[in-house]
Image 1: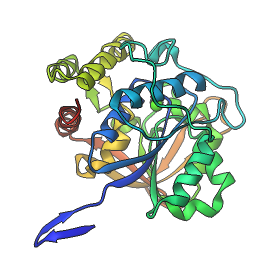
Image 2: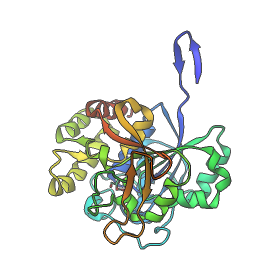
Image 3: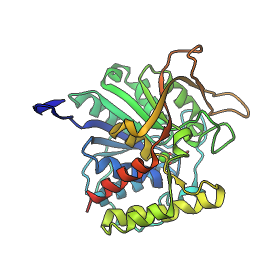
Amino acid sequence: MIAVAKNVVIKKPIPVIMDCDPGHDDAIALVLAYASPEIEILAVTTSAGNQTIDKTTLNARKVLSFLGSDVPVARGASKPLFRELIIAPQVHGESGLDGPTLPEPRLPESPLSAVELAAKTLRESDRPVTLVPTGALTNVAALLLAHPELKHKIERISLMGGSASGGNWTPAAEFNILVDPEAAHLVFNSGIPVTMCGLDVTHQALVTRADTERFRAIGKRCSTMVAELMDFFVKFHEANFSFGGSPLHDPCAVAWLIDPTIFTTRKAHVDVECRGRLTVGATVADFSGKSGPMNVDLVTGLDLERFIDLLDGALRRLD
Ligand code: RIB
Ligand code: CA
């Protein structure tokens, strides 16, 4: 933190590594992080989930190139630690980012793997780094297994995933956790503080068609691209839910870092079910703390108007 004058404090941006499976909401999380002075993206790594690793890696490169970013992008694991991959083309389309036509990426794929790039980034950072996983937690788990000596360089893990109020892919499990429950179990038990932006808050982070038109009316390249992402993203959610809007899951994990006062958060002990026939992938939250350390800041709600305004403000800063 730097004090430049009496009562005026300018906070240094939070250094982050984004680990994502774009995916429409992952893409908008990248846009929000890139356009926010409170965040410095040091590296982007990709996971398999919304689509295959080939497609999510290409999509991450396309979105970051479109933004004009030169951040390194590294490919992560093509499948979960112990399970076969499940993907979600019904939500994100065959490309994983159906809707807008994005140019071929200018940004190359890093020659390093996701774990190698994340480890290099942690080693070289002069400050502890916040991890922002918005897909399955395979890469984060692999990083912690391969480089326990770097745990002290991880400030926090602000993730989209899980739920204390039922699942979206099964009655018990949210998609990101369900894709790789063993990885999630390892991450939640790592001892690193976790901010869990699960369905409890993301099913309140509802973007309406009117919000999409508000973004489109900004009339710039990036705001138009985000509006076109939402045009596609809304199709699955209007056909399958009656939320009255599309839950913008992944940007919550970024927005919480930018302005946590937009959100309500409770301390909880959270662990992950890895064996239940019906409950595998469930994140079991104990707010009493009787079953273990309060390892998670569990996000339970948000001021939706301020969340949408945050997205709008970010889009107005882009070209
Ligand atoms: O359950 C929602 C999560 O699954 C989001 O991260 C979405 O992008 C998908 O990965
Ligand atoms: Ca995602």
